[in-house]
Amino acid sequence: MNLYKHVSNEINKKLGFSANLEVPKNRDFGDFSTNAAMVGAKTLHKNPRELANEFMPKLQELDFVKEVSIAGPGFINIKIKDDFILQNASAPTPMKAEKPLVIDMDYGAYNVAKSLHIGHLRTSIVGDTLNRIFKFVGHKTFSWNHIGDWGKPMGLVLAWIERLHPELPYFKDDFNPDTPVDYTIDSKELDTYYPSASALAKKDPEFQARAQEFKAKFQAGHPGYFALYEKFLAISLDSMNATVQRLNILPFDYDLGERNAAQYVNEVEKILDSKNMIYESDGARVINVRRDDDNAPIPPYMWKDSRGADTYDTTDLAAVYCRKKTDKPDIIIYFTDLRQSLHFERLFRVSDMSGIYPYNKFEYIGYGTINGKDGKPFKTRDGNAAGLNDIFDIANEAVRARVAESGKQLDNETITSIALAAVKFNDLIHDVKSDYIFEPNSVTSFEGKTGPYILYTAVRLNSVLKRANTDIIKQHDYELTGEERNLLIEIMDFEHTILSAYENRATDMVAYYAYDLCQLINNFYHNCPILRDDIDAKTKAGRLYIAKLAFDTLATAIDLMGLKIPKEM
Ligand code: ARG
Image (cartoon, rainbow, N blue to C red; front, side):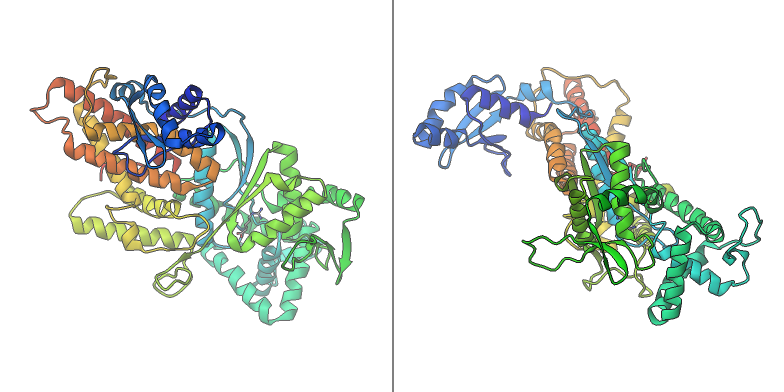
């Protein structure tokens, strides 16, 4: 049961006001607190404390109310009856939304021929957890891995390969796609092509022009360039799949990005032309997106570059058009590094102006950077910018060292799940927009607000349940201790928390919830022995029942965060 919703609705029904129900930080004086008397006092022109006194007996009639008391200027604290808690606490199950929405989510968005950087970590982790939350609260989602497989990097990599191997037949304009070519690319080596090419293009205008020409001809369907592109595309797709597995994120509904969107460019251009939106500027074809009330300059939308090729802007608008056709989404959400926020503001404006998709149905979630202790983007020991895989390797190493020090014997799979939890939980518990410092040692600690602490709590509780080795039955007349009561109340807050996380697009709410729940589970574990010989059968059954609800609730939270509970820890 969603206790919050139940209590809030029943109070409002009883008193006839729509008041706010609060969850006090310290629940010693009440499980909930309502401002009903303050709201009522305004409409009825009464003194709030007096009105609170009038409300008390009415509230006392509600079947779940144990005690009511007045606090401060007229807040009413409410304590819930123990037997009501025991009767109604339940393990969470996926919810039904009152109005189920179709939500398109654009995250991950990995690039072809560019190794995954640390920025891809947050979009993947936060995007995946919000996807799981949206589904859990009853919405339909479509996740789009909008792959970067069409733009400038393709031109750069093709031009780079031409420099290395000018003799390859791919570069001939009359290349026949059926020609077998004995040429393979090593995936490690491929990772170096884009950075090298992009560095060269910066200082060599001729190479830069060559890369642009490659991009334009590739987009126009040059058979040789395309065949070569397919070689490195395959390597990149493999590494993307490996990442999805390594991160334990849900498979994407669509691994379709820029290239897929490019098919819709002509249709979209007709719409733009019919509204006379495109004009020429320095040889490029652009769209003005300025508004009178802008107080910062906002560059025009680059519909086609000066060679007539598609840009990041082109394919993003075409992708909106495609998604609207395929999914008919009620909302489209993007997750990228905050530095792209202006790009998306411009996209939303163009899309709205052209009538393709309305401005107010877009959402943009921009995240901050992951820094080292020096406050600069996190680097590996050799001083290079850390890539996504480096972060996991570093976390793995830190977990391994910690485990070795404790004298525990854990297998590789367990170590990997712990490291994954360390990185992901730390990401989820930070507000998306803010930068944070990644400190491998502290995020892998088994204590405090960390992934390993969450997993450890789950493993330990699960081992009690396994050791009990008995059917667990719902208990009706069992007298709760303070720890048991607090734990059950927290369990009954689960749905309310997830709904708030959904409404606020806030993964940190789930992470904090999991942490608070673990604190209460550990209090319960230490103060309420379950399997000890001196514990009578009734108490044992009651505690096992509570332990099971707690485990199921924690496991659901863990699943929403995309973590895996190891067998032992
Ligand atoms: N591939 C881009 C990057 O790695 C992110 C793409 C985000 N999604 C989009 N529709 N533009 O930075």
